[in-house]
Image 1 (tube, helix red, strand yellow):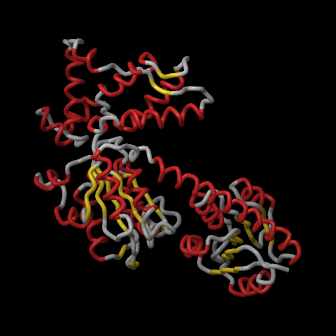
Image 2 (cartoon, rainbow, N blue to C red):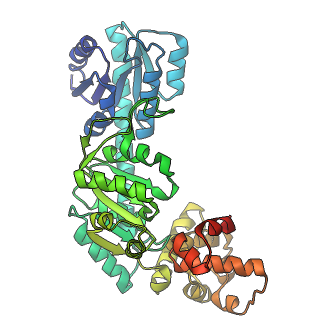
Length: 448
């Protein structure tokens, strides 16, 4: 009988691990075992098992199966296609039903009958292998589509050719990269491309949106925490730095870091070691760092709002993405790409863009850049009743109309001033507040 597939077995009893390894190694190509559930993230990423056989209790004083449910949920969040079979000595129907509702494939009761266990585990391995193969095909398809038609990298303008050349040169290196540019220019797409063309492409890509991460959650999310480190820390959790070890960590909107967060991140980058919240132990990390921001970090350093030593750590190479309004006919190339994309999605026959509509696209300033163009083209495809996009299929106002529309309403004028200040400061709210002659708090209040 040909041995196929891989299985990860997690149980705190070494005798059980030995017995299961002895039983399954005649049927399974690779059997990985551990008595420490804390090793699940690293072992799962390293071995990519087709099935996980997971105990529900790891401490004698904990018999409520909550640890098992925690790690089942962790595996399902880490990999929605993960195939997990739960195992417990307490075969009550309630826990069996709950585990399956929470995403487990099946349930094994200890002590087990060998044939019954094989009848559950071996089909589980087949299911996991099929899911993994399908996911790999989809990832290859998406990677190929991104490489050939990454939305922010479509174009023949000189500025975009220069960006592509820099990406090709720096992606295979280990250099830390800082990507600069306005919102919507495609900084996240460039970060993914650098990872995909790097030597770490087979390793994890972890992304953190620092703009949406409160300061009180920064350490837990990025560095991880131990059980009991704070009120809601019911289980240990690996941070994004640990999860990305061996691969790439993308810190989006790094300009939003507070001074305290900057200092803590700098310490980790300088030492190459991370300590979870609530732990006195440190662990070594190996990550390639890619950061992005719409802020002028050099100006922020000059103003004392961003640490110069941290900037030097993250900007070995800087890549600046041009705003869409500076890319000329790239706008039409991108528009045509989005037409094809959404025409297929909505099953519509649309061949192109009328000359009048093209002029409207080229004269609009696109404050939201490629992201705004994408949304505009999706709407245009939905609204189009002809075989080509025409001017009235767009909802944005052209620049000529704006120049002839005088606004005297004070609320509107204030709103326009705020929007313009934010645009001129590339989204840096502190700088925008300075331009407007108000405090940052006052700006927040007016924006609300």
